[in-house]
Image (cartoon, rainbow, N blue to C red):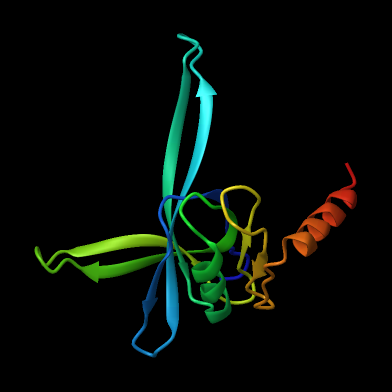
Length: 152
């Protein structure tokens, strides 16, 4: 179908350490649980309210799986770009069909970026070039350079 787009952009914190699994083909896959939150002030009571959404992130790119395994821990803040995918599976206990919606990071139009606080390094990993860096000084410089180029 021409003119359609399946793209998800999220910034959030990991609710647990990443889970790394081996697939049948021998490649690794990483599963992340990402929390995004929004807060607001109730107009009637003035009370601060907050709502948290949980997202399942699945990383298939071997290079990114290695970065996830090495550097990401519970509480780390990340930015992800991926696609929504709904997976159908059968519940072994009830025999009923079940569905899971996940954000998949795979291919040239997906990325994962580690953000500042909450993790041990400030490295960046993009699915496009499968690169990563653990040198905090280099990454800080890249981040500062990018800030200088923002036109507003």
